[in-house]
Image: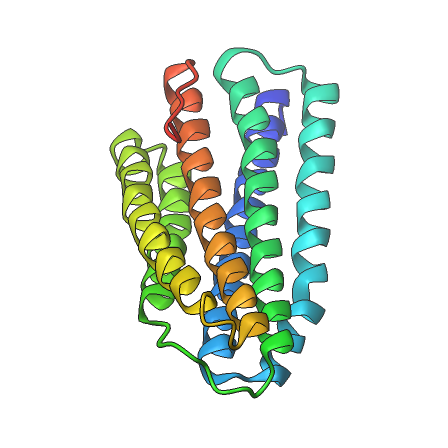
Amino acid sequence: MGVREKFDFDLKNLRDKLIELGSLTEVALTKSINALENQDIEEALQIIEDDYRVDDLDEEINDLAILLIAKQQPVATDLRRVIVAIKISSDIERMADFAVNIAKSTIRIGDEPLVKPIHNIRKMHEIATKMLSLSIKAFNEEDLVLAKEVADMDDQVDDLYGETIKDILHLMEKKDHLQQLTQLSFICRYIERTADHATNISESIMYLIKGQRYDLNS
């Protein structure tokens, strides 16, 4: 295998690991909202336990990327591909952490009946998880249009976040169920930050394709 062939092989391996990382995180996020909705403590505990798989894979990606830079000394677009992989891996790992945080909040709420419907939280979560899925697709296909579409979806999450937090703060004024409402507000924040990290991935894809940095979170 020639030098270029070896580099392309390793680059594909890096991309495949990143896609796997995204898939694991998407599953964790989906399970986290189901655990909350069903107040399923066992599932929440399993999400926390399984997080090591994401952490290990994130380390593998970083190690492979550093090895590629050290041994192959890539330039131009090839170097951007490796750098972007490191950045995207970090963003996805943080999203997995938010799934764990949602699981921890679910455990803290316990079996106390939910004091408000979580329709908005569920909707926020669905959009944020879809943003992750589409951002990984945009990375794999180096699709600029899809990356921009993902970033645009962040506004929907922000609007739902503002509306839901306003409702929670209104309920807090009654001084009842403060612990649960606090945890629900945390969950809203975790989901909003998940969407922000998906937007960061879109920015990284734009940098990969255009060689220029864009701020899509402003």
